[in-house]
Amino acid sequence: MSDQPSRGRPRANPLFLRDEDLREAIELLFFAYRDFTGEADVVLETYGFGRAHHRIIYFVGANPGITVGELLAILKITKQSLSRVLSQLVEEGFVDQETDQDDRRRRRLYLTEKGRALETELTQRQSKHIADAYRQVGADAVAGFRTVLRGLINEQDRGRVRRHDTDGG
Image (tube, rainbow, N blue to C red):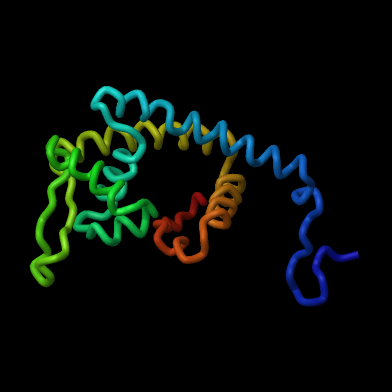
């Protein structure tokens, strides 16, 4: 008997729909997130920063000139929360805000040299963590992992994630 139903879509493997398998996935995500963020948290703490600061620094660094509105849409936090954290990053010289030339109400965000240095340090640490895991599992597992992560992101935000199609997966 074929694994393909008559409509051409692969049949869901019931193994992945069992409660214990779903719970295992949840637990793996919790532990992975803890370890993925842990080293960065230690660095951030030396500046008196938290994960909200990190997310802002990361996305401003990845998208120089991003508007406050675009950043709000990515982070899905309140304007008040963003304002509090962003103000601190601006005051302490990690982020520059520039008025948009076409719309003076809009502010564009850029990392300063100090902000780029911190973003680089944090991203290098997290990249090493991911690279070590990727090396252990191989290209097929990496491709599957990316597919699962994209599936976890709401559909409207999937396009926001950079795609780097490489021969290595």
